[in-house]
Length: 333
Image (cartoon, rainbow, N blue to C red; front, top):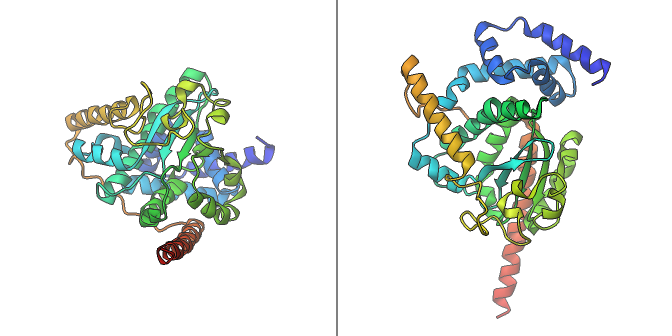
């Protein structure tokens, strides 16, 4: 870290001394003993502009206070709804990279977001973010004997269709929540099992991304197994990367490989049980309404909105092309 960057951190540290008591408490929950590294993340997200980073982190702290984010891990989603969310928002943790970073797997193509209301998908996403930041990453840091503040993400595009347009609004809202309140938490994005739909969208979206984001994205051949084995052991490979062409079926898993998307996976069992335990603790301290968590969906960042609009436009083009091709095929018979 350069001298200029260190100066920026000192300036931001000084400005943070003026936050109110509620904001101080929620900041402690955020940084988990690593305040300097947390400030550096926000500075990095705003290209080391101290004034912009300060506004960003104050807005984030206010968002956390207003939406009671500190309590989100004590508000379990009803188990039947949680199972439905897990079956339609495919995400989980498959292990750790060789450097000790958690490996988060995401089934982008087969996530339908159609089995529960939007608020539960948002609640579940924020709970996973908070569990990652308050439990998974501090545990990884302790195990490695050094600060671990980021994850590796493996995004499976199997099954991605033009109909993904239907989920774009919710996905943009979730992405905005991450960009504004959980910046710079991903070290690298590995994209695997890429269909034509993704390739067409990626071609137009890539130039719109900030350079630091572009550098994090690696589009791999096939299921990415060979490349991923350079950064993680076989045991940490997501199930959809174990075999060429295996895909990310919601339920089909080769051999005894765990499907990390499943409610029955180790990660989701630990997460859900942790939330239930925290709910019991909170009830003994001060009774709260279970499942009453709700966050207003934020207005997308202008850059995110532009990217979403570009994807929407590209998907519409593909839809028209697809319709034309189907029409030719039908007329040809």
